[in-house]
Image 1 (spheres, rainbow, N blue to C red):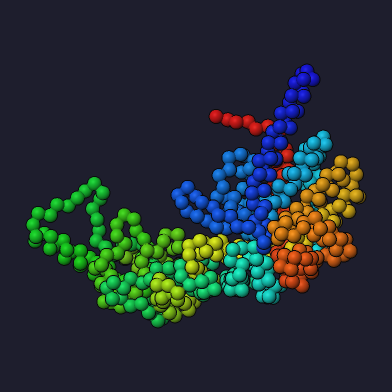
Image 2: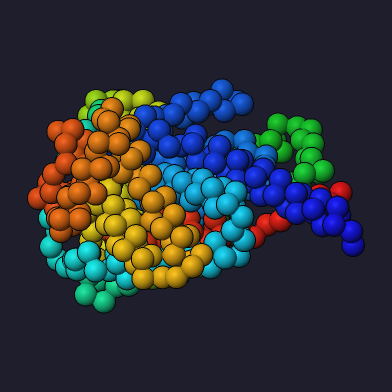
Length: 525
């Protein structure tokens, strides 16, 4: 191979890397302004005209139309962070963007990509040790610490002013579905979020039981308040059977017509009598596509028998309802027996304050499945959706503390401490590795820099002062965006789970190393 060909090959590698780095940095810069309590919100308008207002990194990136394959990696990166920790989805992209910026400088100096990625991975292992050193263990029985961690997470959300309501609800919800002593993870499917327009976010409540967002069917005068309820969940239809799609029945005279109606009435009455015989006082009817799940006649008979009817139960909710009420879904009327029923102390339809909607609350459940429901209120759909996303993040923060029971101060404390300790550690290394580790350490300062920038402070002055305080041994010094100065973060109760930081730095570093090792893009038709 001639020298010219080699040079051309190297140039192509360089161009591909540059293209990848620029694309990924573009995505990181798009969400950078949303970082921190003073971060801006994004308004996303979808093609169908739907509007979303949010500053959650994962939500913003998942809605963006990204075509460049490397930029897509950053979108997936924020989704990985969302699954792993639930919070820090913006931070992870900002850190990845800053590391890529650093890589650009290192590549320009002629350092080989493999050497950079090896040094970064070594720095990552050291960073994990440093973060463990500055964190403190947390006891899940100390509710105040958990509430403070959730409040810190919510401080950057649209609903931050309602964190006094949402934080305790999120903590109590998670603690009610786990055993605090033995749990190592939380299944968030055990906590159902029901949204209801009307009222304000402060009207949000935690219900130890079930909430159905549609009221009971009472067109035929059925009950709306049942004590000591026996609840049955049916998946069969309370309506007359239909012929097949292609077939139709031709009725030629009135006598046959009357006979059909009489048979239909007899058939439906038979179904309702079997439901009553099992001792059921509240019946939940699953939605049906092929034919009506219920009709006026069946509602009339059930009302006469004093049975409360709740219709349009979604197929996806069947599992949650079964676990909550300890009942079994019944697919055929012949197998509808007393042992398949669940029980609750009270099943009651209530009108929501601040609105006209009615919901059915099932409380006093002998809760074997350990589930609960959060009923979220809001003035409009946008606020309600953002409150839903914020509560999900809040639940994830508590889950992170269950998975890894350590807390660390927020406000850029962890990143500044890492930058300082890794710079010292770099001096103990030799050659190219030392140079790359120092660059890695400096890249992590993007988080305090961006926090200061978004709060309208002078980022250079703030980060320099922060460095000085950490060098003097004040490891809890962080940026207080409310007072626009540097204060002790643990005294201000600005704390977050250690898992959020370790996960963000680990995922960002691994993603950057993967991007660095790509030297060609091969399109395949």
